[in-house]
Length: 360
Image 1 (cartoon, rainbow, N blue to C red):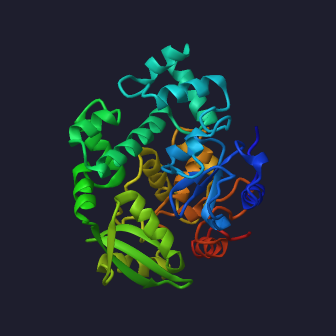
Image 2 (image 1 turned 90 degrees about the horizontal axis):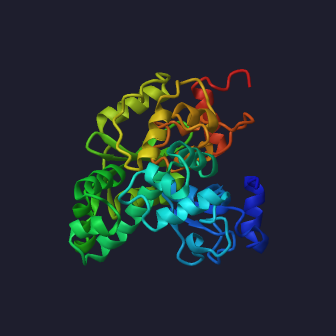
């Protein structure tokens, strides 16, 4: 089934069209939640939503299931039913812990498929590898258990499907930027991660810059303050932002970039959290040469995942560090300047500043 375009999908969710239920899912950038088209919650602004064909794509991109419309358990929907019988069975096995103690080849044996075929089917239908889907499920379950504060951390790891506490700690730290025990301590005692919020007057708009020492944690336009805080909360839990001066090294890099030294931001140290896949996408974004553009398909191919264009688009949309991690350099397959949360006008300005729109 072909995915409707953004405008068609948004028109359907605006009226909660029952005919759209199961055809696609709604990912809300500002809340980190994904929903069914018929969700009774208030409809988000069009600029804050993106659409995917399956719930697995949303989960792999780091979105959580809405507790009101339950897209992860919608009877007869395309969520975990999948678009092919083999994918449907694989997702059911993964949801039941089918990759918790085994590898993809063992999952393939249960499906009567080879490991390479399983990976190919996931790439084609879901845009995410089996392990990424399984890890997202485990980490989501772990966060619930961590915040409940009932089980010791070793039991949280095992109950979430991790084969070892060491692997659990490593993956959790890589995705969330802190240890599971640190999150529990912050949540149970009301502690938060303390970061510095600075403001920078860029030529086209004021920027919000969030740092920890000389490391950049987030950068967004001032009129998207709520979205930036939501992305930080999704990565790090409770975050306290204290206004303060911009670190001199980052201020100097921004000054140089906006004054014409277009590679000045390339060496700014960043810490993003995120899944392995998201961080791979964000690293690929930083590798796009200044003065050029690319598409989601080409970016996916550069990562060795040619069937994951939609998943790459979702990861790009979840990028917490605008401009420095230059998601504005990705354009639509038709050459149009689409898919930029800060607005097409600002995207056009940045690309013109970088010399990527000459002759257009």
